[in-house]
Image (cartoon, rainbow, N blue to C red; front, side):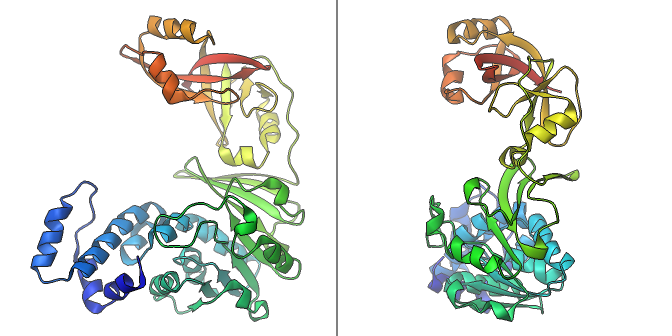
Length: 395
């Protein structure tokens, strides 16, 4: 979305037309909808703008729920936006630390700032891009304690705030199909500048979950967050925003609630043991936080192989931090023998999970020439350093 499209959209006619549209349906007759709107006298630019927003609102429901139907988005802004449930947890840190005036630097479309304002924090949402800042202004309009500033992060005066929240730009500039920046030195603002500020005032930082762990400052609490099994972010917290004695945390959010594992440092792995009746696949947040050892000790489990994030045990232990599988059979690791073993079991539908082995599941699935009415899950990995093929079922 460029500036001209945004001007069209923000007109009284544009907003009325957008809100009058029925919910967007993927695969719907777009041509017929465009024709009907053009026939009603709306300009091509306005029709394109409102249909674009209608599609983004439907897509945004996964992150913003019912709020999405009253918000505006850019493609890139939505992709990078914090889920509202996670944003509420971010805001809660500032509330608990009694930090009332917060600058949300790199606010994007305003997801985090919305959560802060909803908790009655005085938040200034700041973004260098004019279109993005305007979209944020629209989304934050219902909140009297929120304001938006279109400015460079370098021009922000930290002394005007009690705390700073940074969501550095980790993608190339633009509002549509942007690409991910692979080097942290290309982030805006630069992380060195952010960390320097964190030495003298409360700071929180949102980063990608795969961010280089070697670049995590020793003074920060690092918290990895997964939502419904999908790893979504790593948050760094400094000063009073960090919890005492915690430097590593894995937070899992599901429809059933929240569960968190914390530690003062990376946990030491447990020894490698023989394959037991049960196999456990830790959540991605546990893996990235390097808390596999603590999880294993809590379950009386052992590593299946050194350096691989699979645990094994003779008994089943219920835990929110890992998916449990019962080992049905150990199959031949050789591809030809594996194909014969699966054919004997009449398995025609196969989920393939792999870790520590060089194989492409999609290609392998084709080569296995699966046929039959049964389904199964195959884990390709290493046990005590040796390649194994495990037929498993979710416990």
